[in-house]
Length: 377
Ligand SMILES: Nc1ncnc2c1ncn2[C@@H]1O[C@H](COP(=O)(O)OP(=O)(O)OP(=O)(O)O)[C@@H](O)[C@H]1O
Ligand SMILES: [Mg+2]
Image 1 (cartoon, rainbow, N blue to C red):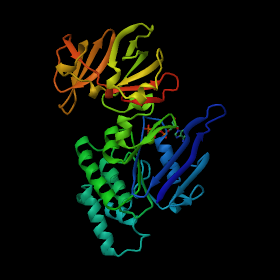
Image 2: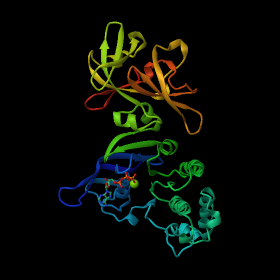
Image 3: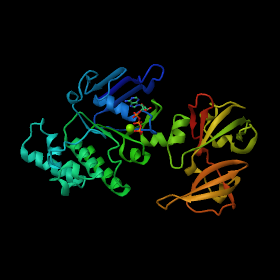
Image 4: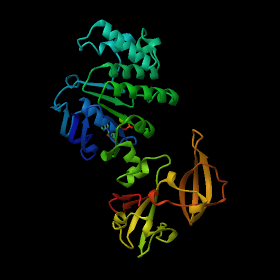
């Protein structure tokens, strides 16, 4: 059953004549019961505005919002039966932390014992049992954020709306709580929309990710599809750490081979990537024409350094260790182009590197529209 439906949702902030901000453009969404959606994008792309319109804190310029089948466009936040944890959606200072959490359960006709056990369960989950008798002004920002989250989680609502719910916690605690919160959400079959600019968090928590840029929804898909099948250049270069290498290329087709000539800013050839046609997907091959100029995307993680298959040579420029210490990111110069790759071993700067771009590492995008032609050839 559909829980949250957005039809052509738009928001224009009118500041003064001629300086309108188009914060959200024609956003469409159909979220099923029990699904978890992440709104992901860089600062100012319209994530909070989208969530605030669903919650009812922001008027909409045009479009429809339906929650559990009911049009809620003109309903007040309290009439929408949504639970939320937002920055600025404050805790009640005169109530203890325990009562702040329990207060949100008042409308639900449940016994005091049940309220106590629900409060206990979420406070253990979020590690706030030791501050239950304290008052909001006397607890830290990270603790306040967890209390807000607890207050939203305990409620029996049609949708749970969370705006960067763990932004103030340190990475270790965040990772632990993220896993617990996901278990809780799934176990209670909650329908969730949460905002984040952290792609690791989006991938870890969500069933679907909506990638936004300047108010536009660029792609709505599973975490796997967002990272392995980006539908445009923006998503390809936004998702992934490090993100996809984006190059300009000219296609050369013969009876037997396909070659991508990688071009520099002056349209001169820097280097070529060549494949035998019989190792390629024929359908994809037919989607590009001889001499067509395309945008080529190469996934850093898929570049191969195994000796048997290498057919390209470059020089190591610099390397950095991934912060968890399990991968090396290496900048490689090939014929004047710079490429980032990920390897399981280090290379000395200026040393020669032999490599291979497997056909599945190659993504092609239309040069003008920036829409995908194929993901992997
Ligand atoms: N009340 C407002 N009046 C005018 N413009 C606004 C208002 N609120 C937001 N905006 C503008 O709308 C756009 C989207 O803002 P929004 O807060 O939704 O971004 P966001 O994706 O949540 O960013 P962040 O990651 O920084 O929180 C921005 O250009 C912002 O400046
Ligand atoms: Mg925001």
